[in-house]
Length: 158
Image 1 (cartoon, rainbow, N blue to C red):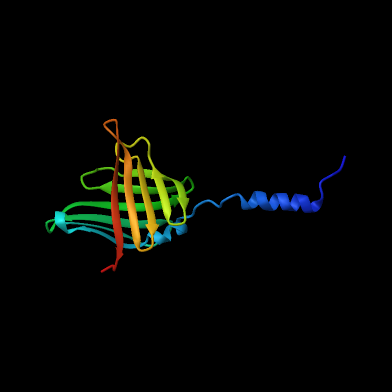
Image 2 (image 1 turned 180 degrees about the vertical axis):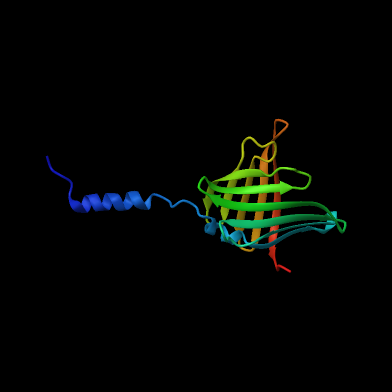
């Protein structure tokens, strides 16, 4: 019986290791940091979202919706990294409690957070394309699939 050569073993291990991807770290989401804006003048609507860069195992964010010059909605956000993974934590207007969504998929410029037990949304997706960021919430509501897109453009932080 012929034994595999050392070269064949090294080659096999090289391809096996190359096929593995390193786990996502919070620092991999640094592309999300900054100020983002969605303007719909016809609806007299302005939605903004702002994220601080990763530090101390956390990114802090906030969102605000302004309609006809009046703030009508806001949301406090965090993305945190702990021993169990990376989580998107949201506390929207009127909610007493926070809701967590676990990072389930990440690639360069795109992340997916999920919480199948939440009423709506069950998924939150961010996808970066150039200076544009599409934030999408999706899931099932009253038995029907639903998705809402927030097409943001990077803007200067004031």
